[in-house]
Amino acid sequence: MDNGVYNFRLNIDWKLINLISEIDRFDANWTAIERKEGQSLKELKSIATMRSVGASNRIEGNKMSDEEVEALLQKIDINKLTNRDSQEVVGYFEVMDLISESYENIKITENHIKSLHNSLMKYSAKDHWYKGSYKLHSNAVEASFPDGTKQIIFKTTEAGFATEEAIRQLMNWYDFETEVHPLIKVASLVYDFLSVHPFQDGNGRLSRLISNLLLLKNGYKWIQYVSFEHEIESRKNEYYQVLRSCQSQRPNEDITVWVHFFLSCLSNIQAQLITKLQKSGLEAQLSPKEKLIFTIIQNRPNIQSGEISEKLAIPSPTVKRILSVLLQKGLIEKQGSGRSVSYTIK
Image 1 (cartoon, helix red, strand yellow):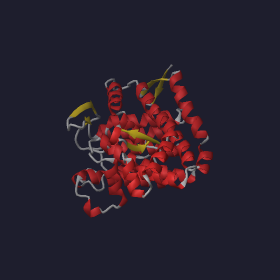
Image 2 (tube, helix red, strand yellow; image 1 turned 90 degrees about the vertical axis):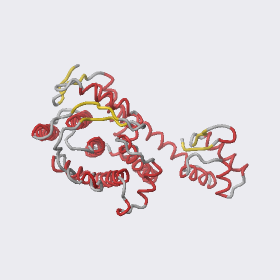
Image 3 (cartoon, rainbow, N blue to C red; image 1 turned 45 degrees about the vertical axis):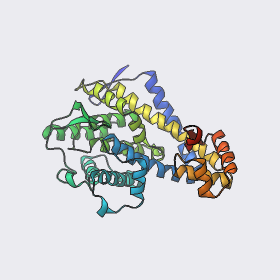
Image 4 (tube, one colour; image 1 turned 180 degrees about the horizontal axis):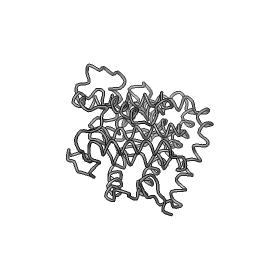
């Protein structure tokens, strides 16, 4: 069934309806889960934030690993943000924190979007001339690859009046549209924002921050406890392919594949969150020694049994027995074989 959404065409089929229903069913139970899992959620939020900051920046070519991001954010020293990667990471983290704390007060308007962009680029010294302002020059969406090469994905809206008018119309539509399901509204706004690419740089990162903001504002509070950005990073090639396939039809394009992609990302991370909450229930049942070993594996991925024994002063046979228990419970997994076997969180 073809339907019009904003300036787009959308085929609303059973697959799409089922995706929306699945996401909303979980959402209906979220308040009860939140009450029950208070402490576990604090830990999950901290982990999700670190993963989101790292993943969203790496999609755009940043080289910092999750471990490097965590080390940087644990002790932020503004005077030591001397390279672009660290400047981008801290900017993204601060906007994420702002959204988490104040999403109810952030309106979906041009001024608020510009303000978020300004904050995102706050520490990027080379970008000071355009932060918080629409682009002055035409730009294109490029994919960055690990070998340093780039590929143009699609052309974007021309700078100047065309961009200003496109964003003004998009904000007005989102504000006044009342019949379209919130998840489709969010996916549509994010798609068009990416297609217009209103700022000189930072559009991809800002689009993911806006995704989180809109989901929170529409009541999908669980999004804070799992990384939407990490899911997109893991499907980066598909992400660019879907954007390109829709963009090639512009204007009045069919965005069905984009909406399916966006909602499937939410469905996947929702399933991950359910699994993590189930594991947190298992973790609560661990003995003191089991908790010690589980915690050191959390903090030191790919650690070997001998290192665990040495660091915790626990006899090697005891460590191996406990590792076996944790493996059986599905809380950890083995990496490698023989003498090089190490352990990481599953």
